[in-house]
Image (cartoon, rainbow, N blue to C red):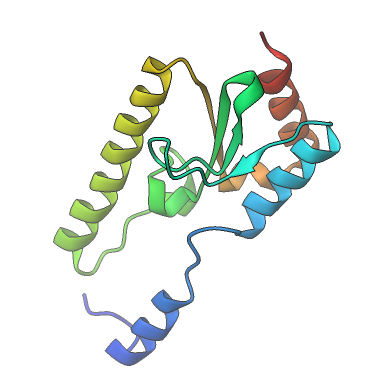
Length: 137
């Protein structure tokens, strides 16, 4: 099966994919801030460069895109049917890197929450999830 886009169209599409400050990430930041918590963004000195870092509470939050980080059981995480060798290597590598980074953070005493892109669609559930994580001791 071949790509439905020309190489130039595909390049243009992929160039528009953002790595940070995405809509789901901004929504999570807004909710956490409204709950009265203060945080830092994208601390490069921590494994995985977490999206939100609450140093005082020793907690970090990652906001993962379902496709790019391989959210199991999510329809958004379906792998492409073209160039499968590349995509399997790329997406499996992302998942493995995420696992290693989260293990390193936990080993250093951080509590980790992963919010999936699809979980940001229901604001009430998201707020409850964030509250449970942030208020837990």
